[in-house]
Length: 300
Image (cartoon, rainbow, N blue to C red; front, side, top):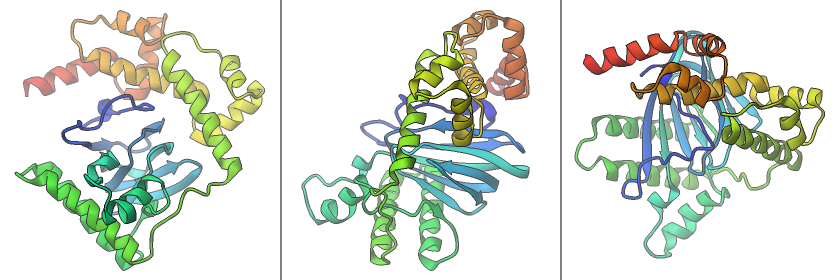
């Protein structure tokens, strides 16, 4: 899977379906590539680093995730990642609706395991390493989930659900749950401001967006806003806007009947030369080269 398969959003896309309420994804990126732009979704997510390492952001926390380690992202948390080191990185992602684990009736499982997870009162550690035995066990469960989802053998859906139950039971038994309801008021304010700006960009990217518009949303001066945005995302506002627009262009370019010039206009570029330049910088190829790669993969 290449860089073209990035996914963005305060994600309006669904992960899985009502019948199977989880989605699984495999990603691979080259050295220094911007793996995931800041976004959030209502469902929790588990990332497992397969190779290399990434600098991961969850809300205002930054940490390096190495091969064999995992990250748990609570629903609603802003998160982003950058490839780190000289070898790039690859990882597996499981996004699941907590209703996957909900009981049909209000029972002890619902009361003691699921509800505290949904309310963020008893959730998983954010960065799961090999430091303690319970973390090793959690990682073993995640690897088993990854392998099961890859093979999709009959019954794998039950295996995913079972492993998640066991993971919850183990952190509760070990007293290793995390309460993330009592967040710092200042940090919460920063996160909500960033969400407001990201939401605006994602709903207006096809139109010109001025820095003054974004700064007024917060509200801050333009200089303050630029410093704030970069401190939160490690991207300038324009870098984020361009990255988001190019990801939308990637999806449109999958439709061979669409002209490249029309795609450029649809994602907010009225200058085709500038669109091609930004696309190449982001994707390491031109829009036409990207289409050729897609076609060659289809024909392979």
